[in-house]
Image (cartoon, rainbow, N blue to C red):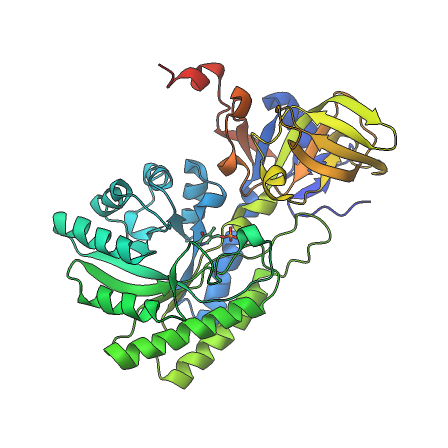
Length: 434
Ligand SMILES: *Cc1c(COP(=O)(O)O)cnc(C)c1O
């Protein structure tokens, strides 16, 4: 029998895929396809494991922050906050959604490499707890907006530590050639600290780095912690200031296929904490609060997407196209960067996966594929095809290409299901048309 990737998935007594006790074929029947399904139980399990690691390795002196670009909607903010996580947002829209969900502004961290003046003003007016400044021009902008609001705004600085994490080029962000952050090696980082300390309306609280995404090695994270704490040491000796927090970013790898060898998150936390404790001791620093910022790993394995199989085109000697009623409009990741996925037929999950399929979407682009040459059970029209590990960067990257409405998202927990995002209607599609 195939190994399912997430603890929330199983094959039930009817031989069908089930998620948190809900039969996937019944979910497809009840809510229609395409359908995003998220397991609340799995999201909560992961959140708890992060919170517990902070207790274990840092005595609670730090916290996980959910990087919400992975999946942003009101209900996910409520869930992660109820588990004790802060949230990170990267746009006015994510910030608005978090505030609407009742997230307290002091628990919000605002990132982004080119926030607009309007977005910064929105954050300042709402008392967002941590604006992560990405450039010198943004530092001036935040100072000006804070001054106009008679406020002193807590900021941190996003630093490019120059770490090369072994991952796909498009999701690498810590190296020198990156649009994100302020460069460490050239001395820009210390200069940004100097300027921040001299400004009246910003209060520099910490530093931030984020070295990439879908990383399976521990070493890059350990190395990033080392480099960043050395910078803390330099700041102390040059300016006599010990910053309060160090945010080490996210990027922990998840299982898209059985080849992905994801470590338990605790292993990253343990290795990094050893470096943090050692470096602080060596440099005579009080240990800053440590933040981490996982996005993908909080939600990815909690999600699956369900489709109905339509036309099947077998081209002898070439490939077998199995068409589904979704595509790049609701999951653009294969079209964007050939992302790996595991596919299976939910209604025959126990049958051998001995048919090699190219799963094709319904958009008018030949690159609109979900996966190529992937083993699934022998398909027939009307089967329910499930794609696993779609909780991150799927709904949040969806579009209305070809004027396809975005599908609904259903949350499941202990055998119960509920809608957390309604599917769009055709009226929704023309709502802003004039
Ligand atoms: C995207 C992002 C994250 C989350 O990355 P994951 O790979 O989803 O864990 C964290 N911090 C920042 C600044 C990001 O841009």
